[in-house]
Amino acid sequence: MASTSQPSGGHLHFLFVRHGETQDNIERILQGWHDTRLTEKGQREAQVLAEKLRTQHIDAIYHSPLTRIIQTIEPFLPGRHNVQRYADPDLRGQGLGELEGGSYDLVDMSNPRSADGQPGVELFDDYVRRTKRAFARIVGAEAPQTGHKDRTVVIATHGCLEKTPSCDGFNPKFAVRGPNAYEVRWTDSDDVARMVVSEPAKLPMKDGVLDWSSISGQPFLIEQWGKKEKAI
Image (cartoon, rainbow, N blue to C red; front, side, top):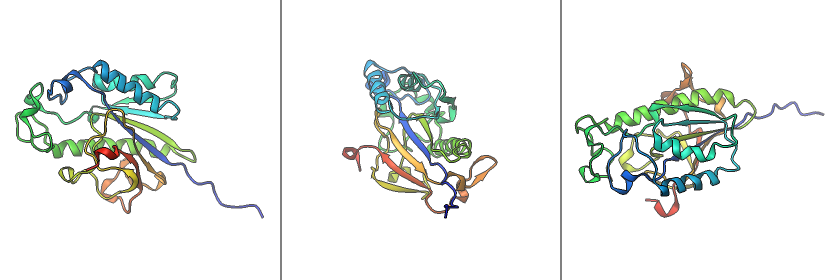
């Protein structure tokens, strides 16, 4: 007797990447929303990233509009003529107001909330909420397109924030950790952090975006995050 089971739906894969080295990184200058360019080393890091993604099918790229991000994703764009690209200002890093252009020594780099209260600085918790809104919109746009095929989306931003005690509140417990999901605050410039949802059609949506408040269980799997030697 022929099987009457229906084919399973496709998975939705997310690949998170961050920009390479800039001159401000070398000089320990706070960047925030300041538009800077990659150094020669940063461009080499972007090439390494492109090589890691060389055989990876990609359907769409969502990215910060800042130059250092554009330069980071450019090397893996050739030959991908059908890839949809979306620049989203909500994928920028934390806005640092009057601190931008100043020394790293002005803040405690180990504490993401240490700049809160400084003139013009975006509160870290507001930055987290903005990032979550952006991700919710991306999931809302991409999940309905999976159908019975896998769909892979790149999110290129300024820091692939995962989970440390100082970043409590970024993630509800909606994801299962794989054995290679190391606890780091920021991934390296040539990392590709990977997360997948096996049943995107079952994700709760409200007005076309992921409804964080209605997530039950742990529908996402964090496959890869950071590097073992950086685990904390």
